[in-house]
Image (cartoon, rainbow, N blue to C red; front, side):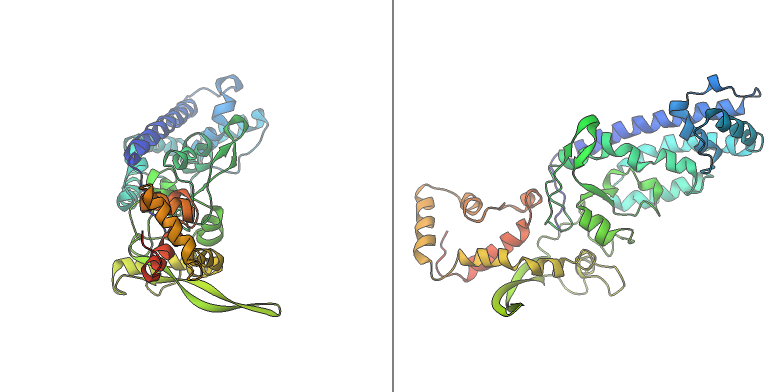
Length: 373
């Protein structure tokens, strides 16, 4: 679990909020135009409607997801039929749209600890249920993804999933800005249960598909029982270590350096609860993302680090250290050169297994009589 930490995060959030609110405002305007059209005493004609923009908006205003006809004339006949029985809904929607416009900036930009309060406030002050077609229209994550959301990870300089620190989430766009590869965005507060938070900046966690879809999926996450990458820094709360273990494959067996997780916080602490859980199902980020089980498979990485400190190679490491020391190369540069990863924790989100590598390096450095850097 790596904290998302970028000195420009406020600037990135404000830029995203500004662009998202502008598009949200445009969609509100489309809805308002549709409401005015439906409230008109005159029958609606085909020429009155911009079908390229208003088809989904019309369906959202009516609130009926079953109206999916591609025949505009049939669709129009249905709308003229519906409008006669939906006058009360239209009047209420006009007031609800005003509320959305007032609250949208806070809803998009609020910090994680305030998101659900803001959502509750909107629910209390509007008449729309969250399953309504209008909510799906306004808070359509898929619509905003390519032009607004996907840029977040790139601007934050996130190269690796913050949940597992194993898989790259490098973004690559193809023609027409369509994603070729790149991050999925986990909604810390599941968007199916919290649709108003589908576009909220601090509810969008750039992550790999394994963590997002395979492991977390739609599990309920809470700030009290799970690590939130935007606010919790667990780097000093746990570390990777290893045990010697026997690995058997077919008829062969070998001793391996099996990674394990060491918790450095009290078992009664909030930090421990977020890491390991409170005993309830799906609590604790280490449990949900199967970090213990997954990292146990990276014994070859630990073995490689161990070999570089191996007692049978004293001349190599001593000569290398002496050479770099004579060149006045700092430990950070030596580490990057020799172990192929980032030294500072604020850079752990740039390369897979950065925390594992650094933790095992620190352990070996502490126990190796040959290392003097």
